[in-house]
Image 1: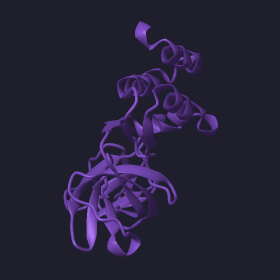
Image 2: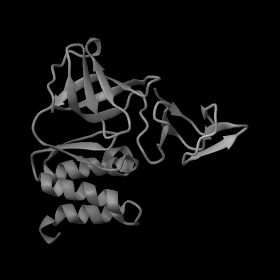
Image 3: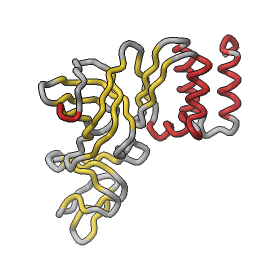
Image 4: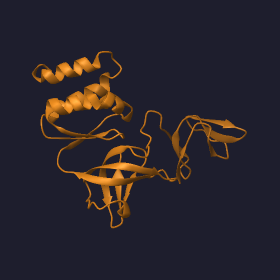
Length: 201
């Protein structure tokens, strides 16, 4: 079974040799937020990875459409699940959707609600830790990209981004540049200049 553990949580009652853990009193404890799978004795650290929070919007891809549930790929160490009672949307394998995090259950599955299929377009992935910088204060950065490229863009907090129409290539370039240069001062001005003079990029 997979379970999410916090720093200091005991992940095993016996000593294990795993990265990002320590052994205290014969027990193995996590030193970071992560996901532990006891059947395989594997530990996936989540520092820098997306941690689902109720109310957050995600973008995902339908991996397995079933009668009562749909399994959603989230670009994360865990899967999303849309349960029919939380949805009136019909989905098929390969559909791109946006949805809202309802909860994260004890097995590490993200329960999603209010799904909406995003038709056409493409999906790109960035590091989820860079999503706040892409959005900007009060969504100013992503609004600027949307307005200048005339593209429809849906940003998931899990790092998946849907882009359709307009100058989608320019929108993609701007988004990837934000990911790569978010630590360099003057990013807002560089992105604005790029969007104003795309032919020079």
